[in-house]
Image (tube, rainbow, N blue to C red):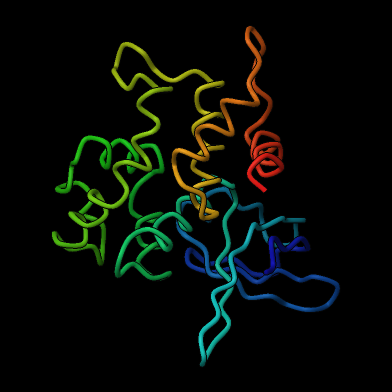
Length: 201
């Protein structure tokens, strides 16, 4: 598995980039959400990646944030009939926050407006992800009056990352909770994931 690519951004288009890594150009497919975060061509760049292997192709999908890659993997691993192309369309069509809110609210209408996502696929996404994205409800207390704090977002992102790696919601939730100490700010989500993996393994 190729976890990330770091080098010089040689080319950038809304749907793909080429990263020059010591003279080798890696073509990476990206969503629009990542394109907006890219530096100018010629600048250093680090792209988080997911390698999809098929009989006829090895394709690298790239993301500027861990949250984007986690949601991509969540869609691939937990929604029947969703492949890399459709998962990228979801990331390009809605912000992560709006997508999570739509799933929790069961708003299939908003999700089905994403290019390539029909009504049936939107219903399947809500059905199969609601419990997994719904864990946010406990920490985010998802009302307009109670916006999630930075700490809540870190906890939520860490649990989603663990679910995207194949762990069950209950296991991920329990592992993250066991790391937290009363009265202390939680560490960054990446550190929470590292510590949780030690417990889960």
